[in-house]
Length: 362
Ligand code: NAI
Ligand code: MG
Image: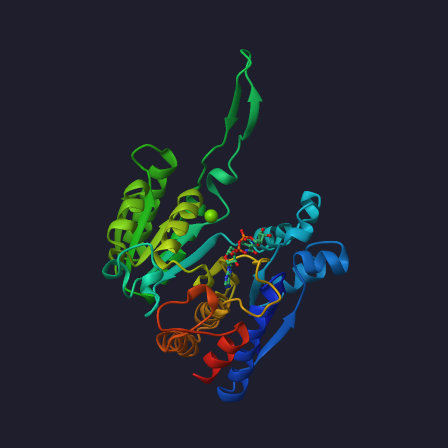
């Protein structure tokens, strides 16, 4: 049977960049004889306009039954005043929650010709290729107790709780070890075991998992503050980093700036494997709906196309096709063809659709 793919373009530049992914899918059908059963659905403001909700139950069901979901972006000023449960981002949060996407993958890759976009010196980031795996459904963002209370003396007190169970740690660490195996077999596990109990548990569980199942992967433990420093000092020392929700949020934004280009950053989120070993998965660019440039065919479609390439690699084991796409991205960028967000010296500015066309030709 064909692989089933749910495409949710969303709002703003979402539909524009997704049209370029469609070009790649069409090319694959024609030239690689690969076809997907593609269903398209509405999410975010687009779904609200059509149905009064940012995600219909039917679309949620489609997402749960699809082999993979590819999402553009949601949101825009038009919907900023809606009550919280109608807002576009609620659609995205519902997808993440009901698919139980606990592992968030954020690659930070520096492409040839984009070295100058980095916040760091070229020699520090040339050919950089790191992958951060962030735990996404646990930790301090969800732990109980939480809340703001007023103390007897009138002060107010804000509380959050960092909680991790062994299962939560092991399942995300497994994802990271598996990914490391597909890459350079090096994993940094990042926490603050020096001051946090959850960090002590994290370190122990990751080490145990390594010793029982992944001795072929080189494991190092690192404190999160040191990791932040090392990412900026010598980022190429890393291959895969696995860390909790809070540290992963911060470190992945930091790593993103090493590449300097929001329009180039893909992401993937995984849930638990089913009986056949296949993980629920959603792929999306890191950027938002960019209302400031929407509707003008100038957005960079590469983050979404690279998210699609991640889908081929991780959900469908189509490494060869993923490689073809990633190689084409490198070649096109090296030739100086650029969208407006990644212009440099001696480059030619093209539209979103021309970038898609050029990539497919390459
Ligand atoms: P944004 O990522 O949409 O835009 C930030 C800046 O980067 C803008 O100047 C934009 O033009 C530029 N940019 C972003 N993607 C680009 C691309 N592919 N090509 C060229 N330039 C690009 O973030 P912002 O402005 O904070 O949020 C805009 C809307 O998007 C808001 O409604 C926000 O809630 C939503 N949003 C949605 C996300 C999602 O769907 N995952 C993530 C972040 C924001
Ligand atoms: Mg963040």
